[in-house]
Image 1 (spheres, rainbow, N blue to C red):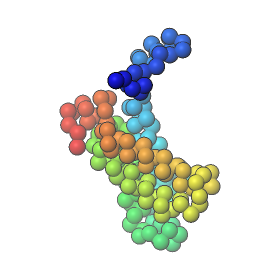
Image 2: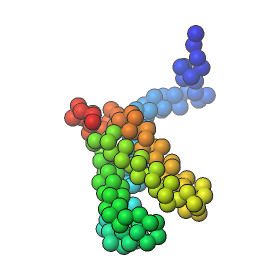
Image 3: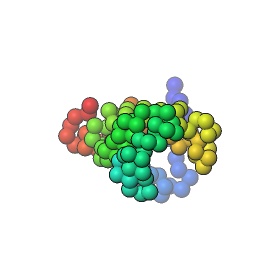
Length: 156
């Protein structure tokens, strides 16, 4: 018995099938690289004060005074976002890094953004939950064929 999702649908325009077939292997690495690189500036804000951020001291004070979280979590969050983002982008230590990103985003969604509602434009949890799901997918699947993990022949 064949199920509909086992067989790919034929494209309406045949050339799209050719293009899709050629680019398909790069789809997942593009998402992994984008996810990692989108995290890096957020970590740079927390750690170094770049891109309009407050740096480690200011972020730590914000965590303590506004969020009721230990100031030391600013270093942990910034490190996961900055260095973890770079590692995720290159696909090195993909599973453990993606697991840390998932945890960070889950905590951010629950502790910081949940009270603001769903929409990210209002500071809601939409964005961190989305990135948590993306990170979870890489924690489950790993870095894939075009990753440094694959290049060195070792996944952790």
